[in-house]
Length: 204
Figure (cartoon, one colour):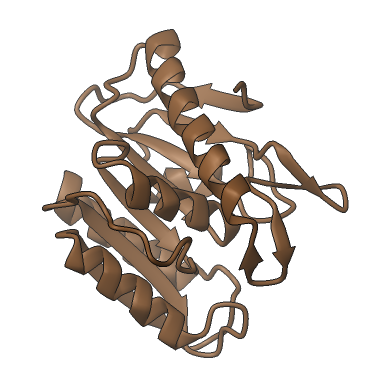
């Protein structure tokens, strides 16, 4: 399935392509400033979610706040993976070197890619993610670097949910780094800078 998107060619062939996945109500341009901070030399693929909730783009439907439509999530995750495959052919980037950077709803679909496909992503930066699905046997994520940023006072994604996601990914072999902020669900400059520092250590 096609997604509205932007692609910006990077300046380094050695840097991974950054897949930018917005939060509810965002679009394909929203997280481009994060890409500039995290890896300014990378290709950037900004994607808009195909679901509308009260006119606001999302990557999958939910039944209520914090309650995902799991059937839709699985279908949209498959669609997004197929889109990344097609975009790699269209734009000529290395499909095996894609790192997702997502916030909130975008972080959730990125986590769902990790939950469903062993080779969908080379790594991920997840800002305020939730556990996308429970009761799923995760693929072998051995050595895949994952950065999780979370807020100690996040009511949408409470700390115990963050710890659960951390445990599930680590249990599947992922190399998880958990970064805590003291605020709520908002994206902060501090966590983006921490993600950039982490990224340089893993991919530079």
